[in-house]
Image 1: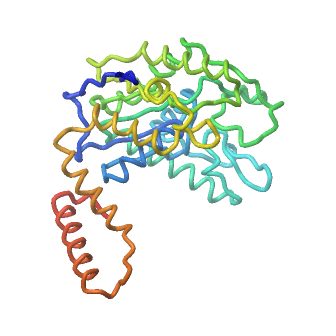
Image 2 (image 1 turned 90 degrees about the vertical axis):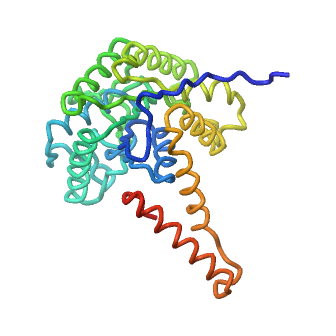
Image 3 (image 1 turned 45 degrees about the vertical axis):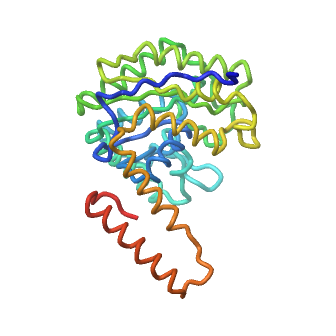
Length: 316
């Protein structure tokens, strides 16, 4: 009896991710879920220097500013509730110190610029098509930072506006990194604060727009994380208690799909070795002074050294 439908995942054999790849992840919090998995398995990856960015316009702004090497100054920040914020960045970069937030912003710009130039794969996860426009400046912001809602106009980006933004993102990056692979995906996180119907409209706009720019021949691909969550994992037991975010079981399941579709088969053996070491590093002995534990530590040290010699970028 068949109790589940499965989404087919063709292997992208021409452009797989391996331990020589350099992966850069941008976008919603689900990009960090995948990014954390890549980090756990010690791939060469980096994620969200400006923190979580939910919509394509925020990602486009970051990429444009990074490529143009924008230098953030006091004109770009504001004070609210005894902390300084920037409308271009997540509150993760906010600070009670002007000097610190400007340092965070400019370091984020430098890191983004570096990653855009050297990455072999850029993974962009879009979370929502709903945006907030600051009335005073007439600019779409990345994050409202709890500024009163009356200061903003709420808008739903059209499919055409999103597609134009994605085209701009691709063109900007390709200008400095012509051979990079793009992997677009839509976050399965439910933006229910916008409303149930509004969330579905938003996701539909994102999916439609992405498929206007997807072109495997041009190294622009789509990974169906949203569809896996909605179809293969269509049960509330795969959500956290907030009923909004996928739980760890769902994240692991979608990660396995990502591995199947994007990680080279030649990397699977090393992934198992890295996983073994990561689990052993978490081991808590009953008797740290026992001979058995000393042998365990010696074997662990030997395995770590062996991997690091073969792959110098892997540091435990």
